[in-house]
Image 1 (cartoon, one colour):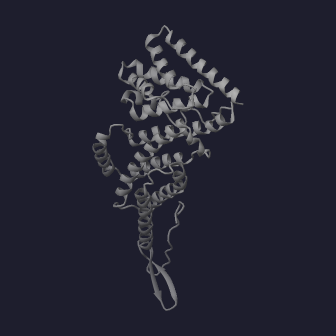
Image 2: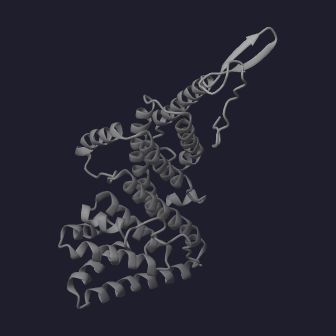
Image 3: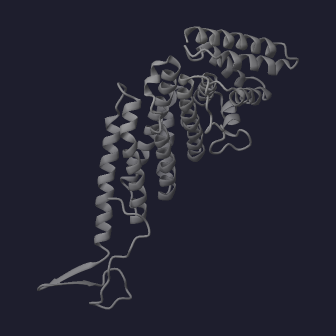
Length: 344
């Protein structure tokens, strides 16, 4: 078994070197240098994630001429879709994730619109599977999960109307204030629409593979760390919106919709604790979710209570006219049935 693994590693190392040499000898100079950077960032070695230098070399392409960013994304996608190795696929996704977080606007734009307008499952890895050995089979589930997380991350940016992941911490306060202004100006429907996308991203993270012990691998550990940073950013976006809806007047339908999203968040909580064990627990975030849920339930009951007036006389309980002007005094007026599921 050990000899077979050594032979496999040697074969893959030689294959990586051959690919780099072939790319370097290409007659298309501007494309060949980009492909070399991509190949060096996405080797078959599972021992470590792509180095900072190899990632920086890929990201530097985004600051070159307008042709280079598109060629860079095409090279990464070509590498991702041609490989049968779970390790290479995971490194491709990790490199793409760095593009989302640290890349230039042009590089991000090329990725978010790939191949023509983006959309769900545009990475096309939902059926990816590397059967070369047991570890690769388990790692394949991480590839599928990571691809879905990245796809949802880009979807969230499209829904919000801006790239919510920022590398430059100096601008965090400025961006936070700008985001708050956008939230204050939004309608209830828009707030809930964007809240749904953010909650969906948290749910996607919680669908993490069962093989959590693979986090001992440095590559998987770094993937989880980067996803954790995204999760923190999404929490910030959710917090801004929950604080805003807490002070708004909402009807029962809107309250039920929001309660549904909060329930989905709470269902993800336990799995997230397992994934990000020994890391920041963000109790303040979950306290806000719980308090917002309780306030929404109270408001909903208060509104429903105003739909009718209960008149008691002796042992008789009678419903009479409340907000319906077409009912005569004393005419029965039951609470209208809701067309959506009531969240308890």
